[in-house]
Structure formats: C-alpha cells, structure tokens
Image 1: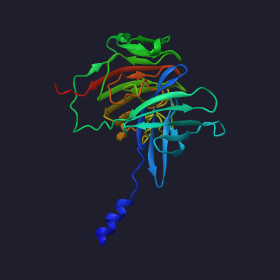
Image 2: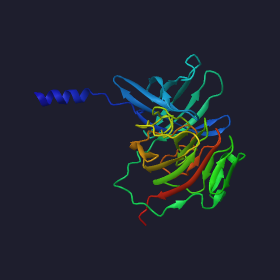
Image 3: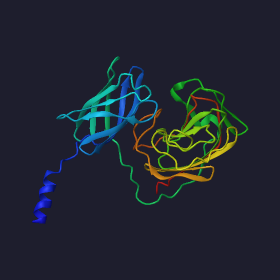
Length: 304
C-alpha cells in the first residue's frame, strides 16, 4: 500500500519546465553583439529567476511563463521601478539551445541566441603550472578593449591608468588558475579584475564598509564576501584569487573572504558569454584612475 501510494505521488510530480536552468546568450544590439545571461528556478508552483544584461548586475525577473514551445518573462528596471520593463521572449530548441529577443517598450527588438550554461565541474584538485609574470613585458602582453584610446602606462613596475579610458585585456588566455594582483585604489576609485574576461571581482574604494557583492572583493552582483578587510584608499592591497571551473576563492589582504563558492554566471561588462572556453584577465579602466603591480598567474597544469 505504501509503495503504491509513493508510486502514485511520483507519477503526478510535474516535470520542471525545460527553461529551468542557466543560459548564456549572445544578443545583437544596435551597436553590435554583446553577452547576456539568465537563470530560471522553480519556486514552489511558479518560476523565478535573474537576468544579466550588457552592464550592471543580475537582477530579478517577473511573470515567468512557459506556454507550449515558448517562454516569456519580464525584466524590470531595478534602478527605476516606474520605468518600462523589458520583455524577454523566445523558444527552447532541443533542450540545450534557445532563440528569442529582448523587447523594450520603446526601441528596436534585440534578437539573441543562447545555449545552456556549462556546469564546469572539475574532478579533483588541479596541480599548478609555472607562474607567469603578466607585467614582465610591460604593455606588450596586453591589448585595449575595442581598440579604444588607452590611458594605461608602465612606470617603475607599476601599471597605471590615469583616468577613465579603455579596459585592458591580457593577450594570454587561461582556464583554471591562481592569480595574484596588487592594487592601489584612489579615493572614490572604481575598477575590476575580470576572470576569463567574464566574472568581475570588484575593486572599489570603500573603507570601512560591510561586505557586498558590489563592494571590494565581491563577484559583481553574483557572490558576496563573508568579510570586508579593505584598506584605506591610497594603500596597496593584495588579491589572491583561485578559479577552478565555476568555483572561486578570493583572499583580500591575507583574509579569505570567498571560499570555493560557485559563480552562477557572467557579470556586467563581460567580453562574451562562452563560459566553457578559456579567457583573458581583464582590468577595468573605464571608470576611474587605478594602479596595479605584481600581476602573476599560475595556470592549472594541463597534464600533458
């Protein structure tokens, strides 16, 4: 009797909609292609989730529906609740790819294509290869984003951005790694360290403050640190960051503030959304002046 009842309950358990999960998007906007991301989760009898656009941070979506063969949800403007929301609509093909469009209340539709985001689970603990000094050749090992004007220069071993200019991208691409960075943040300074060019570890003046995903050491809008051991503006501070698959550990000024936490998806300003591929280290330069030194990376050994 008990087994029969259990089997009956199992039989009526609804299958989650195929949209549930995480999705990496490439959107075609008026100024070209850009990455985006969203996740949909089952929340009781309904669906909920978050959407990451080209900039900013991942924010909640509303009114998720999955009519036969299609999906639709609303992405409100978090900064201005009275502003018109964007509608995201499309269809899932074969369980692993999606097509659709972002539909602003005013403005042109922005079509997108997407794939289910990879899990990036890693077996075991990696061994680390030979360390690489990313500043050994000065700026020769870097390029500026989108060919924009660069305000970066090397002086006595210090990489300096004098003011808002271009983001700086390493020419080397990396998969799993350990990264050491020293940074000097001016008063009200704002920058970031992008891992694989997709996940921003926030670099921000803010002493003293409580921890936050959009404060120093947080993975922007995705992962919140457990503490906030920042130093005052103008002092050199150290980051030691380990990225294995989606799991990130951040040590700020010798204090572990994120310990092996999963990064759900890309952050605003990412170069692209191909999460399964190696990517560069990117230093954000489009906000304020900033200084870096002693940037060293140890890639995971590929076993060859």
